[in-house]
Length: 260
Image 1: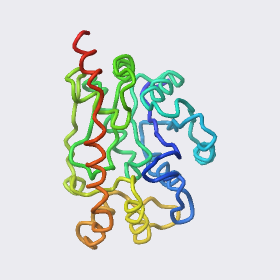
Image 2: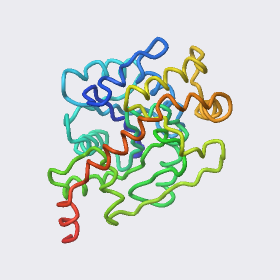
Image 3: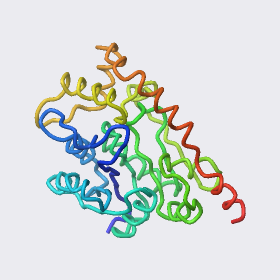
Image 4: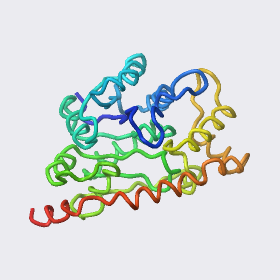
């Protein structure tokens, strides 16, 4: 059994855009479209949906099951605990992690972070310069277990900062060869109502039933063909930045790691 996999994190209890993964988009839920895109990975046989034990997330499990995913149900709030438990349940040593808001993340990027881990053994892997919300994180389960041990009751919104901000883990960043993909100024995250308006506009322009509109075509639409569409969610990124600034990660984590 391959011990490198793909975990999709989704829940219906998001405060900024509730039930975002279940919002209707050209005939089916956002999550189903996201799964269609991610299943183009050549390295992952069966993606895993990691959601919560709450009844409100039953609908996510129904969609994932219909799409052929494995399902793990875990901690309703602590996403680090949920990832660790999902990894143990499916015997993973490394996972490409895709949030429910990363609806334009491609299967090829999942494959890139898995290949990078095979080459470098890095604990935490990112991809440089993709549009915001289009990149997975690659993370070793051993590093997540260490975070779980050290963070105490620290927040888990922005969990990746535990892996990057304390120089505790071996990190790597992938340089993309295709220049069309290098547009970090674009926001393709799904976190606010304005973001969903943009996603809806993109699918209205590019979607053909039975096909997945590629990220490259999405970027061409927003950069070359109809750049005015980018104004739809311009204020959403400002809100995200303000929220991230307020959500300071645990200072207790820093003091604990200094003694290890």
